[in-house]
Image (cartoon, rainbow over all chains, first blue to last red; front, side):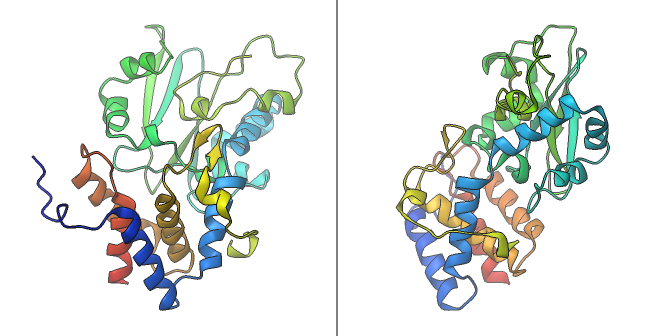
Length: 198
Length: 82
């Protein structure tokens, strides 16, 4: 079945990655500390909490929400979040009528500054194709059955635009502070495969 | 942005990195491959868009196969051509 002529005698991925790193380091193309820095940063520092803060601020500050919807990258930068894969973040807002779902059909484009690196299911071929073909069925399977009268919009992230969902603020959260609201916001809600619950 | 990066690699990084309670990388080599691609792009050896072109082609070729190694392959293809 496999049509890949290279797969049979190729060394495992771990060995190839190691050899590649060694070669690049030897040639002075990559500095180990820079490489380690990136890994550390995206494993430890940059993650969905950034996005949660953005969402919470948009919920409590109507002016910020407006700026966020008009210029995602700019408004996100106001909170100090930026960097690679954050150049063109487009924020799409869930409402009582419309639910937004984000996918990258070709690979795994994702707004790193606000969500960190994508989870494995986001890169899965099944998610990438079903999000477009049958988003309602997919969402129901992922635990988010949508009423028939809610429209689903699917956004295909790419090198040009990376989409980020502004989820709906849950009911009965009027008394909560911005920090308390941020704690409710999950990564899945900002990709559009879940709702925020209080 | 390189200047903002702090800290160095220790065992915990290649051990069990978790964000939001989920593994960011399933295997240590995945994090190394990610680091290589990010560092090379950051240093301007190729643009992320070019890298992405390689990644997209590799993902398309491998979709459906278990244990995809698209990231490493795209990384090596790009660094060879730069």
